[in-house]
Image (tube, rainbow, N blue to C red; front, side):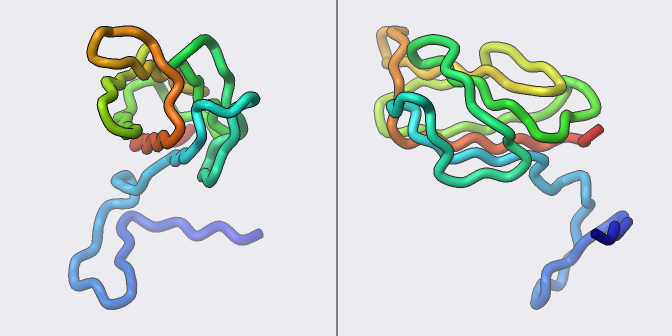
Length: 117
């Protein structure tokens, strides 16, 4: 396997380049209602851990350099979601309804931006 070291990248057909640090370090699309949790697609995700109802943990294949990364999440309708805890090697999410009752969600996606170790 070869290693390509760059500062900026530009997709074919794009006029602007972007910093490599702006590229997502991890992506996960999964079914939070399946048992065990199942990844539909992912990048830099080794596994999912079902910590509790509505609390999936995304485990990274390659850790981030620290826990100061940015996490964006979406899930199916009428859901509140957020980050419960972060570590360089994983992020624990929390999905709940508007009454703050934790709930497993079928369609979940998480994107993480930050520097990999």
